[in-house]
Image (tube, rainbow, N blue to C red; front, side, top):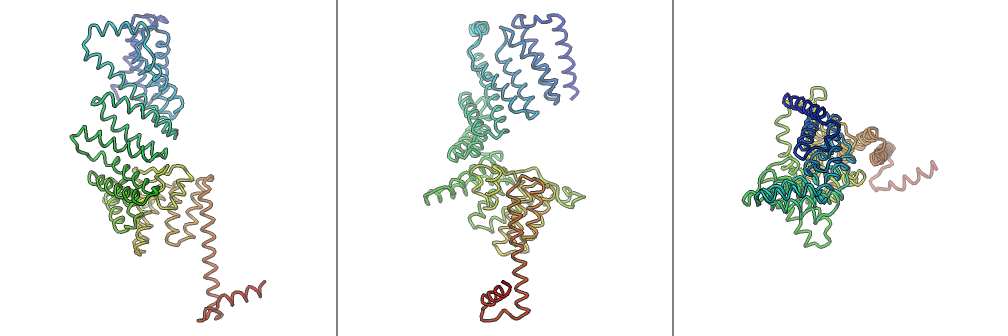
Length: 477
């Protein structure tokens, strides 16, 4: 941190010196001196950005941008870097639209033909430099262009404009294909991200293709082997195969996709016992009525958490503190969830769940199907701890659905009411609250009438209850 502040101090003094020497004629300086001034402003702005002092960073970067616009000798790559950091400053402040303006401006500069002065400079450089140096310069330009495309895609993702994000990511992939080994690692990441965007946009086939390409590129880099860091990609690919199975019209194709999903899940967990992949696989097993295996994988995913339960215990709530690992469901991925949660994703467009919450919810369902109600109740208590430690409206609804599965409609109504109370625009929670109250009222009335009938000996062995009820209704009518 001290080094950053020292950097700011030195660069500020340098710019002050430049300004005192050249004043407003900085834009008219020769190419080398002008590059030095702008590089000083770039370093100053980038350092302030690292220190999260974004307004100061923007001030100096805007000065550099203004100089670049006035000068005829400005270097294209340097101009693009200044605009990139400007965009990063606004991105860090969640102003994604403004960030996109700067990213796109930088991309436009990269696409334009160089100015005559710059072209001449490059011609002279080409005459004197080797072909390897030229190739290196071109690769640097393409790598910078690739970074800007990825940043633009991130901005669109943050604004949930997934189709626009796909457009930028596909361009980034094309550049990475050209650069080959120089940024193959970036290509793996971009293809994975592209698969996620195709998934959110509802294009299952392209999502599967992107995930497979990501795995192939990783194998090329690592001599045909995969590694634990590809566990998430394998898990996402398995999920997409299961999604395709759910929407297949042909039974044979459906079975093939289910088998592929099983194989990819197994391959993922062979690389690493990742919590989110374990939960997704358990959800897959539950949907295939393989409840015992689902329970086994869910317990494995929660095992590490239980081992650290004491140090993670919240002394106020007496519940474990929330974990940071989450699963995001959106687009066609919702069809892999239990039916009640599918409706939630439909209503919200995107559902974000901690892996532990989904794990305990599926545990409740699985134990119920296995007839192990005591275990289901224990999982329910753990689920309550997860939900109450976070107090998020959607999670209260998940708890409400779990309580409904065990027939606890009054308690479920309380959870749905809490979800609606925390978010008054949460209409689905309000609908579920009313539904649970109606079912609870029906159950209470049914028990009340049963008690009355037994007390007055209206109920008999011949099961003529309907006739008795009809007489009572006629009497009170």
